[in-house]
Structure formats: C-alpha cells, structure tokens
Image 1 (cartoon, one colour):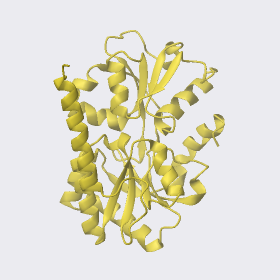
Image 2 (cartoon, rainbow, N blue to C red):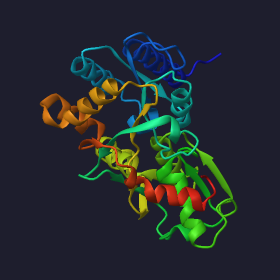
Image 3 (cartoon, helix red, strand yellow):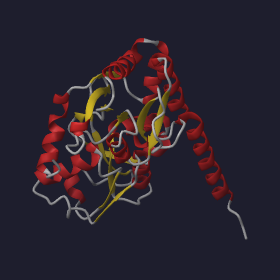
Amino acid sequence: MKISFCNVACQFRRLLCLCAAILFFGTPAGAAPNNGTIRIGLPDSLLHQQYVLIAEWRQYLTNRLKRPVEFVIHRKPDDATVQLDNEKIDFAWITDYPNAHVKSRIRLLVSPLYKGQPFFSSYLIVPVFNHTTSSLLQLKGAIFVFTDASQNGSYLDVRYQLLMAGEDPDQFFSKVFFARSHREVIKAVSLGLAHAGEVDSMVWDALASARPDLTAQTRIVARSHAYAAPPLVANAHVSPSDFNDLQRALIGMAADAKGLELLKRIGIDGFVPGNESNFERLTKMRQALGEE
C-alpha cells in the first residue's frame, strides 16, 4: 500500500497545531474554569490559526493583568455563545452580536478599530477568471459560500441585501454551503468550488498582505455597507473589577510597543469601549429577516 507524502505531512501539521493549542491555550473548550484564571474565547475564523500570535497575546494579557489568562479557540462561531451561556468562559470575541437570545446575559466590553473606525465591511468575491459578474443580483442560481450562518458581516448582510431587492434569500442561490473560516471561503471561490462568496474585509485585506497568492485568485465585486465590528463581550457573571481590568488592558494595547506590534499582527488599530448604538443597523437587519 502506498502512503502519500502529502497526507502524512498534512496529518503531521494537524498534530503540531493540536500540540500548540494544548501548550499555549491550556485546557480544551468545555472544561470548567480554573480559579483565578481569566478564560477568553476566540473565533478561529478571525485569527485564522495564528497560534504563535495568540500565544504571545495571551502572555501579554497575563503580564498586564498579573493573573493567568487562557484562550479557548472556537472552530464554530456559535460555540463561544454556548460557553458564555454556560459560564464556562468569562469573555469572548464573538461574531454574532447583537444576538437577542444571549444579549441579556452578556455585556459589551470593547470593539476593535479597523482603519480608525469600529466598523468592518464585507467583500463579495468571485474567481479571478470571472470577468462578467458586477453585482450580487447577477448571481441568481449560483453556488454561494459563506463562513458561517452566524456571521453578521457575510450571511446576514447578503440575505438582507437580497430581501431589500425583493428576492427570497432562501431561494435565490441554487446551493449554499459554509466553509467555517474566511480563508476557506477564499480558497473555495479561487478553486471554483463556489461561483461566489462573502468574506470580512479585514480578513481578506490581511490575507492579501500575508498570502497574496491566495487572494490573487479572487476578484472583489462589491463592498457591503459598513457594519459594527465583531466585539469582545463579558459574561454576566464577570465582576466589575475583572471587566474594567480587561477593558483597560485591551484599550491600552495601543499605548505600548508590544501591544502595537500585536495589534498590527491581528490586523486592527486598537480597541475602544463598546457602544450599543453602533449595532443599530445589525439589529435592523436581523429584525427584517425575522431573526430577532
């Protein structure tokens, strides 16, 4: 029996990632909180497996807070919401805020700044060889790929655009599938596995710098309206002192050299206190789609 070198290498990389996760992040998702440890959930879709960066950020916050910090990496965006609800993590960077089902049980902590604003947008992308598509409405009957159904910037925004154009969001595309990360959405489109997809602009821009070979295989057709950037939130059980300490540490990252370096590698300019009014458009879209 022949053993593929590529398969062996792939398995080895997965093993290295698992070992890195255990080494840097501690106990797996779902474990009970440790006494004195601040547990923060992070979506894999936003930081796309930058394990060394995440480890350095964890150490930075541990030093700033003078207590242990543990990151829990979530493969599915809604995993963080579940763990917040079950009080298994203290804070989380979530992609589906405001979600009416959990909003009453969490507190808005900080929002990231991208290009100086607490707002992101998303890109409608097609394969680079597609020279004709110029709008979302031209993609009726197409195969479309999203990151995840809970993503505000992609899934929610595209469905809202279709609804406002008089189309049925559930019937417009011939097939919809979820790639679970923005990087995989870009890969699916570049390989022609989907006719089009939607990705957060921050992630596409970061990959255009780090992996231009990947993004060069896609073409940006349109950019969405600005929407509130995915925020970090606190579980309702978090004490006021822990809330204030982490908020201060995150906002203060832009004031020192190491913090600035980490922010640049994350792909953002900094953090500011969360502002509920920034999420009014997202709430409006959710209500129009019957998700509130």
